[in-house]
Amino acid sequence: MSTRSTERGFTLVELVLMIVLIGALAAVALPRMDALLTLGRDGWRQDVIAALREAHSTALARRRLVCASVSTGSVSLSLAPANPATSCTVVLPMANGQNTLTLANAPASSSTTLYFQPDGRATSDGAGTSATDIAITLSGYPSLLIASESGYAR
Image (tube, rainbow, N blue to C red; front, side):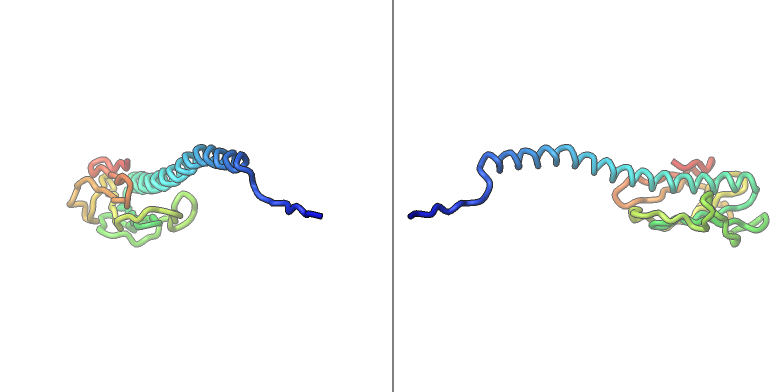
């Protein structure tokens, strides 16, 4: 009496089909994951640009100096209590009601304070004497540029 042992495992055809299936899924899924990462990066940029535009419009509307502090992962705004001023001491809530806009998964950026003058210009000092275009550098991404004469963020 001979007993035949049953061997368990995958056949060559099954293994080849699985490799082809995994390859097809990877070809479809990886580009979509890359698109999601790009979407997150673009979302971060748009949030910072929106905060800077809010600072610019607040400076024009209130005719006060508005200071915008941008650092890795956060943006905060403050307002000068009176004119003329060279610094900001009053915390200005953002559109979301918070004092600081916290940005998850933000790329490393240069810590910068921008000063939006009451006439709408963006400067790198509170007195408004250095009117040069300002760039916020991002690690691995294009810089955010703020035009000095118009205060426009792009």
